[in-house]
Image (cartoon, rainbow, N blue to C red; front, side, top):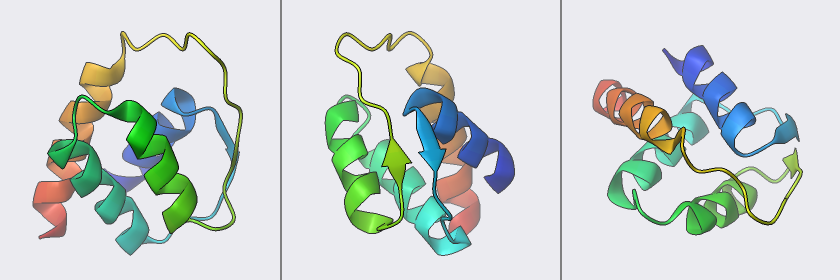
Length: 81
């Protein structure tokens, strides 16, 4: 589940370089679950939590697939507890 969640994060946030730990991925999932309508803050959270992350930022990003990311985050957060 964590590897799928990581892949989904990479796709949604256009992450092209990082090496998150299992703990960091769980924290990201919990953040997304607690803040489902604030993806911009999720981007900032990821950058602050994972100091080696590199991502592309585009204006007008398509948020249509974020429901899938939220569903995955809920599963990861639940498993991580």
